[in-house]
Image 1 (cartoon, rainbow, N blue to C red):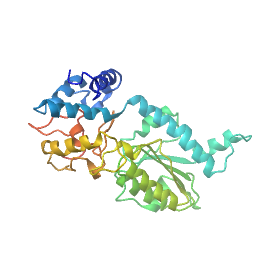
Image 2 (image 1 turned 90 degrees about the vertical axis):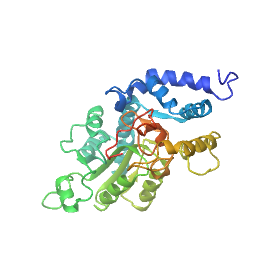
Image 3 (image 1 turned 180 degrees about the horizontal axis):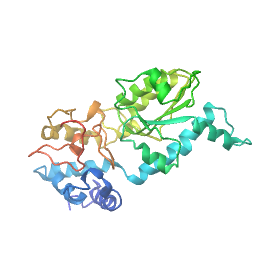
Length: 320
């Protein structure tokens, strides 16, 4: 009714959201249990945070920029990470011709010499190994929680299985992560991994990565010969809303930018206060099914008692 001529795309957006509610949004794990209600009810409460129709319409239209990653998409990314990115990297660093006789045996040998690790437990290395039928990973190393106490000699011995002669059974090291924003924790793990020296081939393979994290990882890849960066899906800058206009940008972003700033007083405060554009001013609208990252704009995920009901509540490890 508000967009009878279809110039603002509201009717089309409504159809898209109804389709996505049926196909994907019900997978959002944080609100799947505990009485959080279905997407339609959360949407109504989210729009109901505001008191006038113009602001409600503007907030509703923000969802046109949403990028939701469902479980099926993440499982597909698991398979692509292994079958394409990791296998191509192993062939490259070990000079394996995939069309040569005996290539399968050489690849099997290199896989046995590969240690798969996860940067944080959100990656889900158990699911990754199961989907890709990887059966050589009795030890599943997680960098998170080991960064401060990390010891090179102990890592070589325990994780890379160094023998008494200094030879490494695991000479290929893969760092995996599901979603990367600015990449601060990921880059710390990369720096430690590459400090092992050129005898250890290091691959960083995030499933989904934002532009800032990708730039930092690529800079390291260009500077370190034994390190390679190969993401499954790298988001482009044009999908992120910066605090100031970065021409060229989406024509709708000027309106959304004003809305985020005007509404921020409703989600302002708490220990995790990063401003209207989220952590490190990333300005994302990305919502993985497992949890909404703090790099996405807070009006999507932040709960403030008596002030703001989010549409995709974030489950944070830290007090809010």
